[in-house]
Image (cartoon, rainbow, N blue to C red; front, side, top):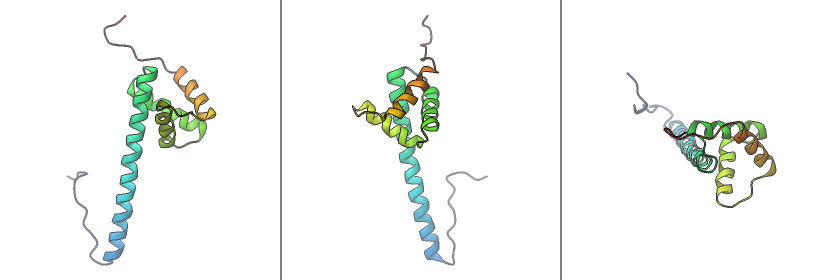
Length: 112
């Protein structure tokens, strides 16, 4: 059984190539973690501001990304900046408004 925690063996020959490959992989993983954290924070903003479910917040970010042709982590960074008082680019603001309008706010369990 293999797990994500299982260690990969380093190549015995071409040690320098193996180290360079691992350094690239580490940098890619670092960027992925940072991007994921940014997206999660932006989802939190959408949850708080627009009362969306977490899955819906992700969907809204994805839709804005697709409609503006801007990478999702970049859109997420713009949403975080907006929450901190920065202006959203007009195209992102329009796409965000449209995406949020297409998704109903979350309802609290037991209310109604």
